[in-house]
Length: 228
Image (cartoon, rainbow, N blue to C red; front, side, top):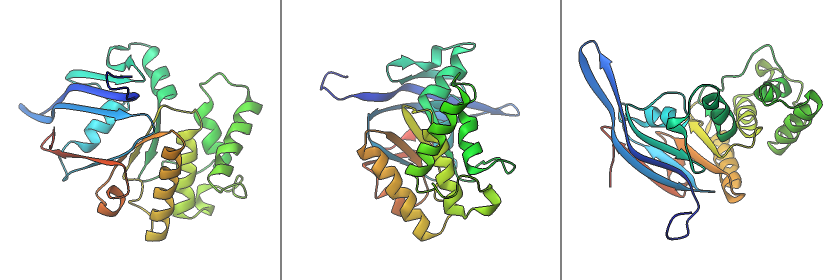
């Protein structure tokens, strides 16, 4: 907890990311400082190229920062190395993607269970846990359906179940409503709200004002910097 008693689950400090386009440096993030409390439902908004996806990839340990630090659950993940890095990513972060990223040859159950393959859990325990989260997503009768047999909304709920299955500290969702209709959009946002109310931290990158308006707080990025 910080000095005012808030339970801070995510903190970034002077986070910077610079890419090279040929010989020209591109400053995707320019000193981002944010704090997120446990159980918050946060949206990150901003125009294309503002650094939203870059920030998400650094928080999610999919990329490394040029400068600065990321703390998750009190751990300075930017300093982790070797096998520690993927272990922390697996334990601390759950990802939800716009395009679902489900394996077409696997069933809904298989797509969720596979996320636990490296967690050193017995197969029966993995299957039981996968069934549990899919049922929580309202997909108890879709366990043996492959992605091609599911609607877009059902596929996204499988994706959310996969993100939740390892009980991560933070769910990172990159445009999670971008490929669904308005009814399903509302359903997905309601799921994130229920998760947040239950203590799960959820961070959503979105272009959708309707979605952002239904989060606890919105962080706006402009040219790689947080707009006050």
